[in-house]
Length: 265
Image 1 (cartoon, rainbow, N blue to C red):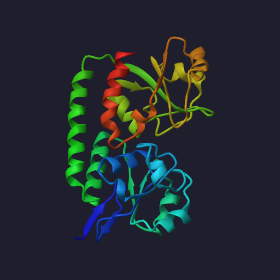
Image 2: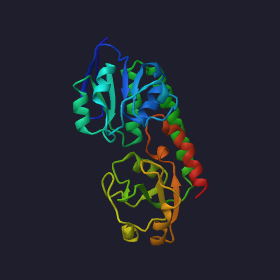
Image 3: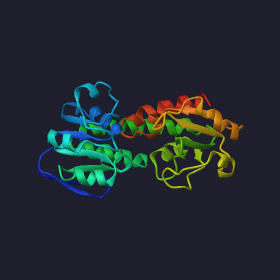
């Protein structure tokens, strides 16, 4: 049966048959595809697709998220390529579109995340599996909302990069997850991932907490020292970047991580 579906950028795709050969250029969505029961259909992934770990030894690596090996992808003869607006550039998507349909996701909210899982269920004929995951995530979200009610709010700056320093701003999945945690993002008035100067942290909002993410820049304890000199009253915490930035099924694990984080602030 022919399916006409629209991705999260508004691009319409027509599928005469269910895609059987999938290349994923998004680590979190590789994990989602696996969790939906599509391991055998995945033929290519990026070097950053580390969950589940064994895929790196059983699937073809087709480059990174920003630098893909177009010839290798073409040789694999995929039926569909999964991309993401944030992870993969428009130029990459345009060139890949000459090979086969490219489905592009754009996840900035929990609602977007649910829609993506639902879409994958439709595309790959895994509606039952996708519905189960959506139910799990919705239930966990509801339970977390109850947990967070009595928790205090904090002003937060979430760092993703060093040299230059960059933080998470508005219109990001990170900002959404900060919000549900009652972490008030002092950079929510800025779009996406602005560059900032640590000397301006007090004027920018004087955050109570500084979150240093494990990815894409792998912040370590020593990286907090420089910021600590500027913002002596803020608590600096190394956080698991996957829990704040990976969408898909990872969100289910993130709720438990957030509980742990709150209980250790």
